[in-house]
Image (cartoon, rainbow, N blue to C red; front, side, top):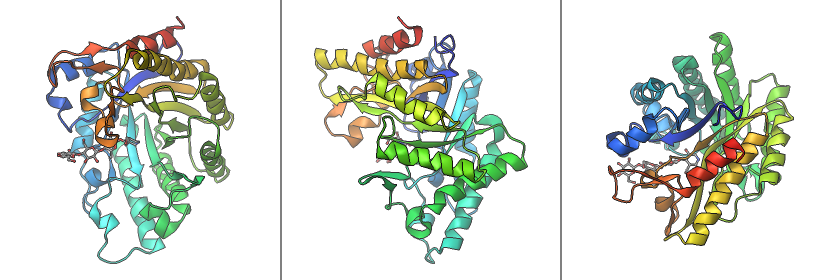
Length: 333
Ligand code: G3I
């Protein structure tokens, strides 16, 4: 249905290798079925602390395992992510010798360049920089990142420059994305991301797309119209957008009204992507509540994904109504 709608994929995040999904027969059966997911995003294993645990020492084993599992069923892979304030090894966050602008810039360059070059076109795209902007004041740079603290906003440009160099020097086709949340509707934070796109383009640095994470709360999902308007603000700049981390959380236990609302919320995001030519696809931030990040981050909330396992981990999955909401949005039903 996603392909018939002109999209590249409907996809999912997965924590492979990671926290139990790879050992869950029923989870893997659904992940590997070739009609539900045409794309996969590694939830954790490509993050900085796993890939460069010591300075200059790269560990590509886990990421390659993810790529191999996803490619075995012909999925695109959105590789995630290169530079983010979270999931950093202690050699970055607590260096033996304090970073200077020059030494930390060199770390960014080496990390980004080597990884983009190593995986090449096995990745459809890279989230080069993740979540650089703050919610308050909206659109300012997040100043709790060590990269911002030492380098200032230039760290974002430097990361994209390194990725661009790796792409151009190796004649790669891999796409370069900026990825963030609370940029799914027009406002100061979305405007900041748009300004970043324009800035990179003006510098002849490659940026192909913007990831709209879309971690929504039941009943508070931006309307389809507002999501479309926001997507078009980005595509007008000459980049694609993708819905990269969709889920819709709600207070536990779910009520019938919440479940009905959740279907409408999933529908509006998927339908917005279908309506906008430059929106290339929708990825859910895992498909099974059993492995969702939500309950451990938002106490008392959950039920955000498309499937659940009523019997617990490694028991048969049940499709939720939200699944049909997505399918209807893709087919225009
Ligand atoms: O694997 C260990 C486990 O052995 C240990 O017992 C447990 C104790 O806390 O931690 C487990 O690791 C956790 C890992 O998820 C796997 O569940 C980490 O502590 C936890 O920090 C990590 O959280 C991830 C989070 O990013 C931080 O990297 C989530 O899985 C992942 O879903 C989440 O994804 C982010 C995107 O990358 C960016 N956008 C927001 C999104 C949601 O926060």
